[in-house]
Image 1 (tube, rainbow, N blue to C red):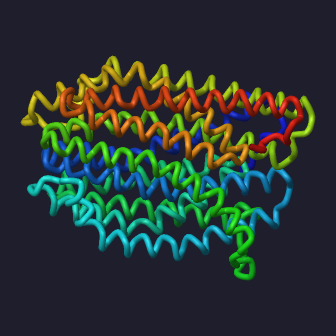
Image 2 (cartoon, rainbow, N blue to C red; image 1 turned 135 degrees about the vertical axis):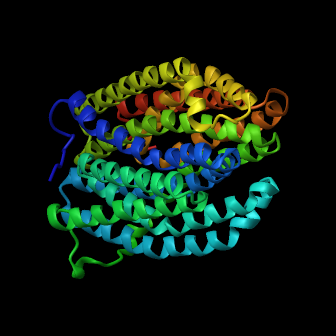
Image 3 (cartoon, helix red, strand yellow; image 1 turned 60 degrees about the vertical axis):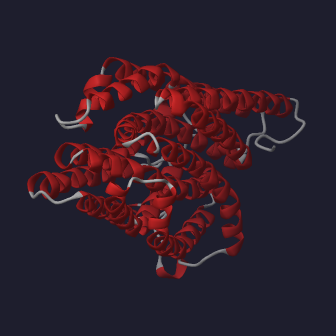
Length: 457
């Protein structure tokens, strides 16, 4: 049992120990769709790559919406753990799991019915519509596994154990890759089988997480008598979690609207955009992981109580170290995007793919490489406010970014291609960061003057 109380011990060491497994875990979770895209592009063809790319934003809405709800619950569980309230910690986990049982089943039913009308509304080309529809419907069947894994992982992370979820993700990601190679590269099956292997891998990670908690983590292990839904905790969880889920979902909804614009540019642009957004995912998601580490750090301190100047200085120190981690990761992903953009594009495409597809992708990555610093900063600040319980503020900031990104995309993409999307992202992040910075400085002055308790709006 690897619990980590971040209210004690060296600040930088605690953050690094916690953030490292989070980053690796999310990188492996991203590998599900990355492996699907690479194998689809190389062994099935450019149409399959475009289909997987069109499905990706829909999948991300599901995954990030679910993880947002789990993240909101995780903030509460971190506070209960920091305050030493183990009984409330268990009741919160039980409430989220029981609510999720009904929530995820409802999502499956809705998804199976709405998939085709949604893809038609997104202007998916007719030649790949049936393939994309079948792929998305299978992914919807895996929603319950996604929900339960994210909730159990959030519970483990709330008590400071980020390494165990990583191990389960590594195993399931390897399982997904192996099954993809067998059924698609080896046996020659189509894109739908790739979705099936993803669901099998996600189910495996959920089952392993449940078994580990039952056997090894008594603070979280629920007996049959403890499985009950606490309405008061559910109301608080939904208040936290719904804002976080909406905030997490705003990005993929924005991406879905951007994808609609890209779909009008042709299959080549769709294939190029799918390839480059896989790199975007590898930039943004680890930055969000560092933000989550800041969230847990702040929430645990908030649960214990931030009353003295020394307490506040420790929280600010954690925030500064978290931002330093964000900058370090930015340097790494910037170098990858700038130095290896062409090999990255060729990784997703077979030898018969159009040179224009590779050219469009390289132009996009050239522009985006240096811009990845902006989401690094915004994710760090959002992690701080989320740990303070300021969920509505993080939602508003994300909405600002998405609004400007989508609006500018529709203005520029028809003239500049997918390079116009990079410009639109930059404009959205600048407006978002400016608003976040003003809110942070204003709240910090009020907390330091004692005008309101730490964490209060």
